Image (tube, rainbow, N blue to C red; front, side, top):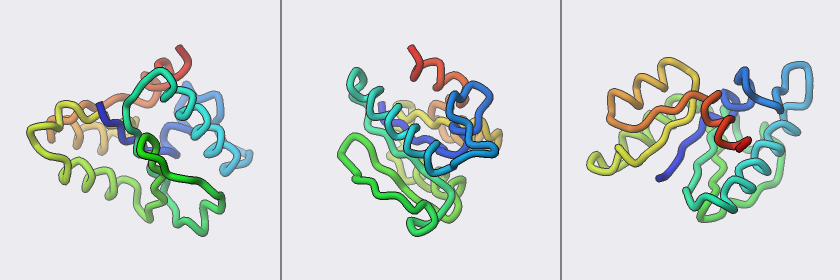
Length: 127
C-alpha cells in the first residue's frame, strides 16, 4: 500500500520522539527519513514524504529512491490533496494518508483513501 505523509505534522505529533519544538527542524527531518528507511526494510510500501518548504529552505541533501520520495512543497496540504485526487480512484482504498490535520484526514476519507493519524503511524514505526 502506498503511503503519503505530511512530514512536519508527523514530526510534531504527540507520539513523536523527534519533535523539533525549540530544536533543529532539519535534524528532525533527517531523523524521520532514517526512521522511514528502517521501516522500509521490513515493509515494501512506497512512501512519499511531503514537507512544507522549498528545496532551498529544507537545506539538506537527499536522494529519492523508488521506495522513498521526499517532496518539498510550498503547501503540503494542497500537494497531498492533489496527490489523492490524481491517484486512480479504483486504487485509492490502497492509499494511506498520514496526517493528524483534520482537514487532510477527512479529505482523504471523503476520497476513499485510508487516513491514518500521525500518532497511529508512530506506533507502527516504533514496533
